[in-house]
Length: 195
Image (cartoon, rainbow, N blue to C red; front, side, top):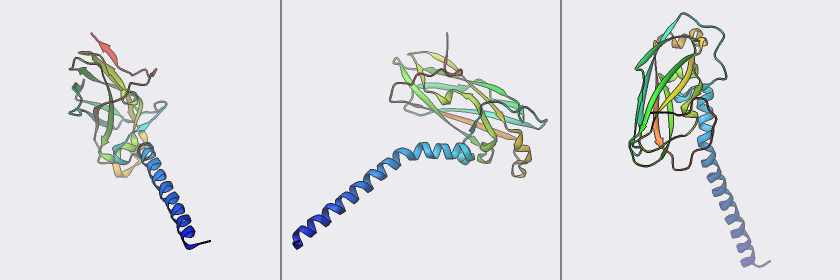
């Protein structure tokens, strides 16, 4: 085999390795957001909350004040606010809170909400049963909707000595505009139009 043929073969192999590396990195970049979200929900890292199928069978007398915060991305022309400033809940008590949103434009817009809990260390114990943030919300021009979140603060929080100082938890949502059409969902807490 001539030196030129060996060099071409080596260059092709290097090009294939580089292309494979680039393809692998592109695949990881698409998978990183869902993997990070799953990690945060499993660990409470970054104030992410957990998702539960049902409320606990017991409640404790320990009270926690849950405050509600609502923000919108500047690119989304929606009004978004919490229906209540705060609620006092017992650990383990299933609670329902509402937010209200209104499309301020003359066009149909789809939005989605991200959320977090502060202090971050409480995120592991803040469990959502149902939430508008699990689905995309579609609002027609001028339409308003009441959006519900059903949650509880896990009674296991009482056993975590690191959280003895936590008396207030803030649940924050930020709505963003979605570029794609919404997925059809049968979620019970989806947008409920208000007249």
